[in-house]
Image 1: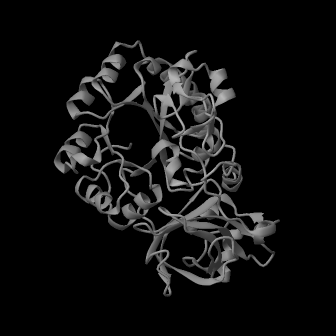
Image 2: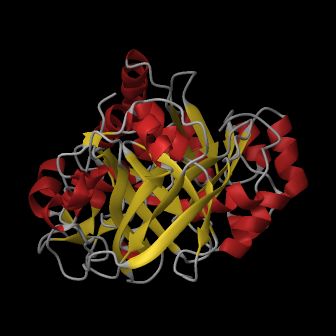
Length: 421
């Protein structure tokens, strides 16, 4: 699998456009300029729960870290800050530095952050690709805006991450985050898919519908409008635009191109470590094209030694009926957002209830014990995330705050009752 530098993707995503958020960057590349890349096996030793030492309230008391696609991210609770950093070994002595940005999940506060791995012996071991004798800690500083970090920050190792069995999956809504959340890229773009792992996701949900010439593309609304796209002539039903016109007339809010489903699946399979994708199919006529695309990219994933699960979302009775009428491969996996009986009736493997129905713990357990998986959507508030995690024990949660869901699972979550999502 080709490794993707998350920082390149983020820089590309911060295109011109009014009201979009741009991440701060270290001048001249910071200490990582010319640094050696941290060996892949070493990154997992930076995954843990860390306690924040000191008086700052910006990051909360406990943060959970995870390493994905060449970066290391730290996630706090509530609306506290998360940070996305890249590690590098700076000198022969084995100094291991992590540099990047932090920002609040909601609101515009952001800044630079620089952390050093300690003790020195652990940093040396990690830079050599060896397991450190003792758990690592991190010490450094953070700053506001584009200013260099000057406020002390100490992350003391607290405990290892939970390793649930079956695993719990964090599903990033609309590819990583919504455009309105200003995570540095537009929703349903290739750029946001590339950084989804850095934002806390194991899997993603994307929206698919057909152009006038029958090409599945990623877009949420049934019509193009200035809510999600820019372009003087980019206005009206998606189904009336051939792909060539979409390419010529429409740009997403951060300046990205509207991707085809094939574009997106290629990035997922070849450029990320994401393990699953939930394709929310918006119109019945898009079902066959979406299934054909996932078949192509499932074969490509298998050729690369990757295991990626492709799930086709059906949100209404009309969509379920269209699925049942379609001549589809027997191994096509579907998801139903209605009731468990509809999941069984359609021969689907996943039940995806809306979170507003409540945790429904006993029903979730019965569905899981029947061999199916359960994924709630779309949960963003800590209070309700905690209730669903503790009372329902689902296989997955779809969210616009993947880092928050990841951190809350590490704090209060338990293994699901049933099979892998």
